[in-house]
Length: 144
Image (cartoon, rainbow, N blue to C red; front, top):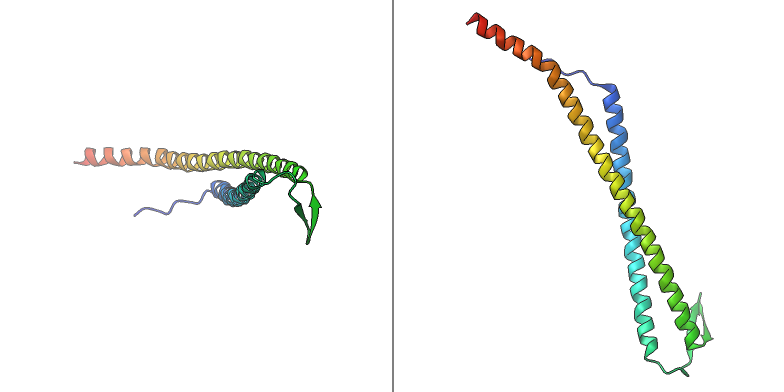
């Protein structure tokens, strides 16, 4: 009958810390994905609005939304505001992509560390049990 393996408290603590870090990183990645989706929709909306404004004649009266009111503005000014907004959205999107890549790399490293830790634990327990196993195997052969 085999005896239960004693729990390595240091390994258990490290395992729990890595697991918490992985869960936290996964949540952050999902949050970044949601933010990226919102930015992409805003960018798409902005581009559609710009394309529609290109079709308008220059003397068209245009209004820009400011809170709950609309202000009469020059068409060119609204177009430049849209361009500025698009560039900000693209910059924010690229920043979020970089953050996501960093977090994914961090998550992958954490997973690898966890696998490595489990593998080291297995190797450690295997190396401790092998001499006993080979010793018992040798005793069986000697008694046969």
